[in-house]
Length: 231
Image (tube, rainbow, N blue to C red):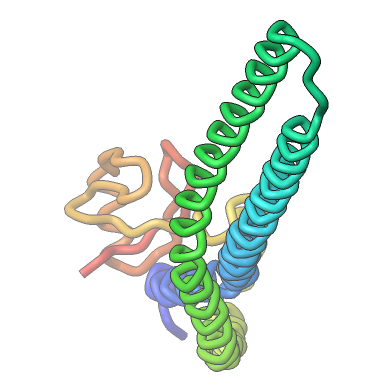
């Protein structure tokens, strides 16, 4: 039967491998959510740009209606009967004011048209961004399903190997192992490099080092992890 310390080394490797695989499996939904958010953001940006264009067109139409109404009012004023100079001066002043309002409205229309042109030019880029986000999300989904299958298969295989290796632990070691793994999971085991515990960086005693050389079951006196010698 293999020595406990040698078995622990294999167990540590398998447990770390399983932990890495589980982390990858857990990251999948978050990454998927990230792509969904990108698509939603691109859709919102495009809809906002299109909505902005609609509002600008409505503004332009409203100002066109206003300009037409002012022109009609001017035509009406110009047909108003005049009895004296005072009425004439007042009428000309009112028409002048109306003409100024037309100039102001037309200037505002030109400004809005400029903004509308810029926003209209930005639409193809927004559509391109959305198309790319959707394509990236679809490609991620396709690739990720393949990776999920691979990682799940690897995890299942590693878990079977782990069970086989754990079964080789001696009866007097297994209770200590189960207790420590239950509380620390994959962190219940640590390698030793040059008499230094790789987990807590504490130097083990010469006696502990000798016991590890013989493959005996040794627990770090500082961090309470099960130890094995790293090559």
